Length: 421
Image 1 (cartoon, rainbow, N blue to C red):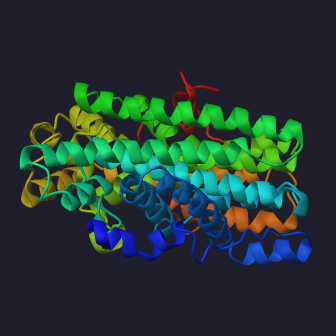
Image 2 (cartoon, rainbow, N blue to C red):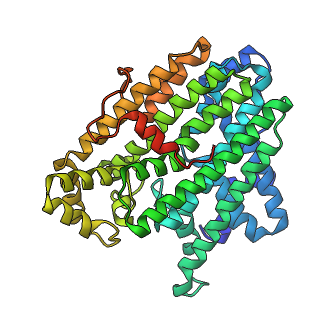
């Protein structure tokens, strides 16, 4: 987006003080039902108002900073995503008996989660060297293109990446501002802030394990699960559920059941994402396939394939994995060979089975405590959808090992070992 285009962009106009959407929060049960019908829209209205105010202040600081960074953060946050994390906050609140008094705080926490997701994705694209996000240029690529005629070619990418890191930092700062300004009973605000603090640290720890695994070529299944838990499961599902429960003042039994269900679904969510990266359709995902393989990410999917190939003495599979992982220039034909190995070793089937089993355990946890009827079914449906399964049948207690040799109990213990609690 060129400088004059940024200035004339409708989001930039909003940031300049025009067309701002006022905040409207549910003040009675009727208002709650309005949000129930479309949680993403309700969170979007909060974001529009809050971000317009932040972007206006950024414009006042400096027009270039406002247009290049603040407006991009605003547009990125408003125009993409399924609002899954904020929906988890809302439906956990409703399932735990939260009402009109807690609605505003829940929607604001949901908005803050959308901003921290912006931070995570923008930084992720820089670290992964991904030029595409949601079917459009990634933020760092967009910034580099904007200044292509004014920045030397050999410095353009570095400029875009540095500016994108600042954009992610700004999104995180704005998210923290929202949480710091919550209006709720003191004990509940304290609980939310404690959870928020833990979640931010967990997310960074998971990202570090991810890039460390890339650099050192570690292929441990338990380590892959732990990284998936810290980077995705806690932050994407468990912590949002815990935040909603905290705002509702939920008791320990309900909170623990929701957190356990959230951890199972969160890990399943990441495992599904690993599968989509290789077997998904770019027309639906908005980004090229094979990014994890080209980046050499130590995913659970690859760790299972490697372990099974070693156990079977499958030299061909091991050779394909060894020569493909971490190859940024990997061709489509070589990528197809990797897919064949993941199918032939049974790794794809093992991961699919693991996802189904985790989703089933999540349902069992959810059914172990009484939840309010207005939130119970929507929460269950959201958990099943996040796991990427058609349904989730609670399994028998997990005494035996699954196909990959890791029972769910060990998967969860591996996930939390060393995690910030």
